[in-house]
Length: 130
Image (cartoon, rainbow, N blue to C red):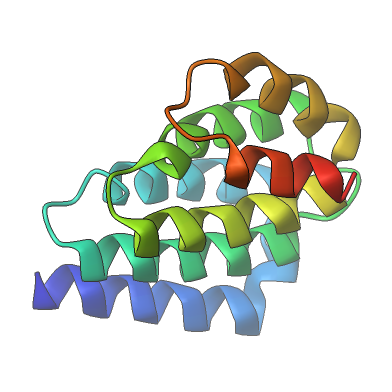
């Protein structure tokens, strides 16, 4: 778990330093690896992964592909219904950033999963900001 945690920290630092210079293709290659980390056995890794996702969202830009934005969002939203409230909160913060960047992509996805989640407080929190 320590190696995976360090990898998430390192990738977050790299994204914050050079993320805006990455091509859309390079960004597209990063997010599936991050969504895999959300399934990690360590909650510490999962929470840190959300910080890394926030760094990725910050470098996407408004013109980033809407299709890939939707794929990213759908891969993350299931974890906003996690059994661990710390993971839920971390995921929610990342989704909030993405929703501010691409509200027209996020709104329908959030409505689509709302009835599938055990609790809707986080979904409603993000929707309330749109």
